[in-house]
Image 1: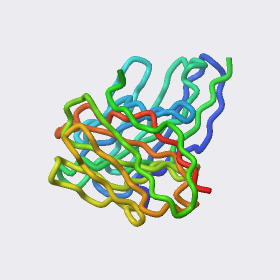
Image 2: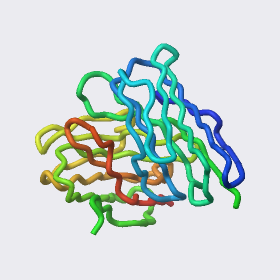
Image 3: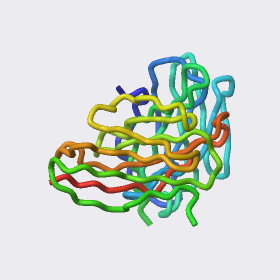
Image 4: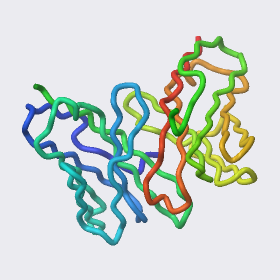
Length: 112
Length: 113
């Protein structure tokens, strides 16, 4: 079963605009992570936010976490055509098991 | 060289054949994972291993087996391939603290005909 559900499933924006993707999950977590996948390639880790953190930044990425609502958002500011990819949230829960449960992903298209 | 290497990159096999997908890593991580990706379903965990002697089933282990030959090597086998095992397969590694997330291989695209 999928832990994370992402919204929207697909997003199309113009270069320079901001892109926001949301992730909801069902059970308590230790941390939540975001990954990017270029078409047919392996996933690349973007950012990790722990359950006791509310916001985290990395370059043009901003991630928020609301554990009371069991949701997270990923904001990409000033998007570029190279940001075109699928973005997945993944949750780690249940002690130090190391298992990640992935959402179904948001496909982002940034038009030049 | 890539930190996590998967072989083969692409494979077409016939129903009923045995096939092995291999994964090796140079990250020095103890933890290794196999996921499959199907369109619209995200990634689903098949098996994971925390060290050579610790192997665990994931959510969709039926029809698959694994072998952790060494800390750096983790292979996935399909004993008798069936068409609904057609998918993109990923190997990933992580450190114990998972502080930096997973490192993924480039994937193996498997087609069972």
